[in-house]
Image (cartoon, rainbow, N blue to C red; front, side):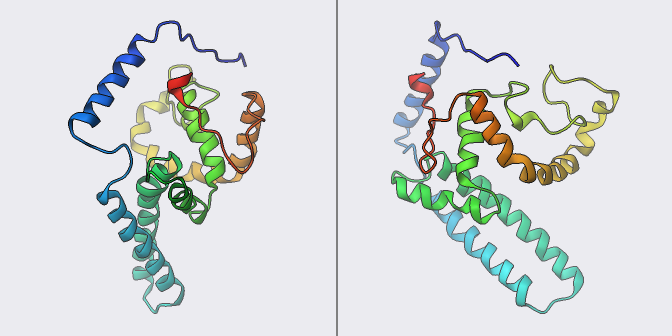
Length: 207
């Protein structure tokens, strides 16, 4: 696989977008980190997940109630991932780094690893977005075609019907192989110099 190199000689588009984003935050007097709405989500979602989990372990309920509670528990964990962990691991949950680190560890509570997520998402995905063979966010098996360089099959005409089941099942494979893949990607991208206890997040403004 050839090494991907970006041409940064013409940065006019990036500069234009950056100016527009800066103007948006400035004109509306918005912080670049979380506000009370984000904090309220965390205060609701995390205790809710703990309460549902404890009740599933020790509560008395009929089978159908257990299935409904399990579905609700899964939905709550997804909401934590998207509303708390994602922003925290991006460093945008709070202005304080230790709070971002603390809330980012919610990824570990969800059964994954915040350090590996930062490598796979912040570095690999956001640097090589939608590049087939590097960005594994679009590598969900042959049944899903997510870019033009992936082989087309007639079945893909119906992927809008089965994609949600496929993506759900593929998570089992991701959890099993994600750690190994991440370190293979690190070797390929020559990022071995990253300190293990302090993941480097590439600053696209300086690249």
